[in-house]
Length: 79
Image (cartoon, rainbow, N blue to C red):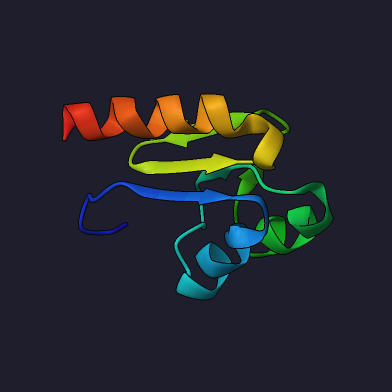
């Protein structure tokens, strides 16, 4: 994420972002059950189907896949 490459995570993959230490000061979403972990890692958690914060794209769950995929395609088109 620090290199400016597109990073995308959906559902419980937010835990990987926590482990990578890249959430401090960033907006993100995830499956609701890991919200507290993202917030503890410094994220501003948003309940939305997709959250785009610079090169970071996050989504809540598989029901949000259409919007998640559109956001990824749009970000890659800009890269």
